[in-house]
Every structure is written in structure tokens, then in C-alpha cells.
Image (cartoon, rainbow, N blue to C red; front, side, top):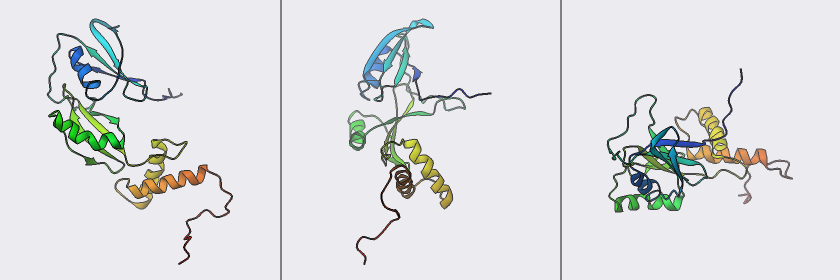
Length: 195
């Protein structure tokens, strides 16, 4: 028996209401370019619209003009989507509260998630959206997952409940130590001030 190895998210498709509500939210609020549209190939009554969330992947929405937005929270039963999180830069994140407030969009304010900061709000159809901003940058040649994997091991060894910034910093140091050669025989921390 062998796995069916994935290599990233291809796209996520949501069931939307009318076309303009989706365009206004995904492009008009979140800045995702509207890049493609065609009929839903499985349902001729629906359109299938595509947005680029910023990494070249796709968020797609099935729309239909006779469906109207229902702002009630989408179900959170087992098997349902709880929320979708999007990465934003620190510069954008620092403006998010004011920009959501300016539009009258109810949100949670900034939440500290230890490895990133987050703000939550609902789209016009009640789907919970998260804007996330990492608290670290992975070293060159590594991914966020690489750093989190190492930080998790450090957290468990320390008996901590959640990954903290110290675990992230130490994980980054370990990854750099393993991946970057040095002419030094001993690469441990030293005091250059010799106090």
C-alpha cells in the first residue's frame, strides 16, 4: 500500500451567493485579484469564479444570482470548515483593525497565537476568516513548517503547553547550524566581550 503524496493546496472552493458579493469580498476587501471565470462544469446554473490569495494558489467560489448572502455563522459540526486563514505582512496586519473598523466589520481584535498573531471576522456568508501574521521568518532554504517541526520538539522537551518565541528562536538557530557550514571548529554561543 502506498500514499498519495500531496504537494500543497491546489485550490479551495466555497459555495457563494451572488457573483458580486464574492467579488466585493475576496477582491474588494481582501485584495485577491479576480483571475478567472467559467461556468461550474457540474452545474450549468452556477458560475465558478477564481481568486489569487497572494501565493498563486486559488480560492474559488460557486456563485448563483438567485442566492443571497446569509450572514449567520456557517456550521462548525464535525466535517465542516471552521475557518480559513490568510497570511498577511506585518505592515498590513498593523492596519487590519483600523481598516476593518472603518468598514464597520465586527472582528475579534488581535489574538496572540504564540507563533503568529491573528484577527478573526466573518465574510458576508458567515464563514470565519482569519488574517495571520507570523512572528518569525524561516531561515533561507527552510519553510514555516520546518521551523515549527523543530520548535515543537523543543517545546515537548521543555514540557511547555505551546510553542513560544524562545522555541522558535532556538529552532531557527538549530536549522541554521545544521544547514550552513562554518570554518569554526566550535560553533557554540560565546561572549565576545569577555567580561
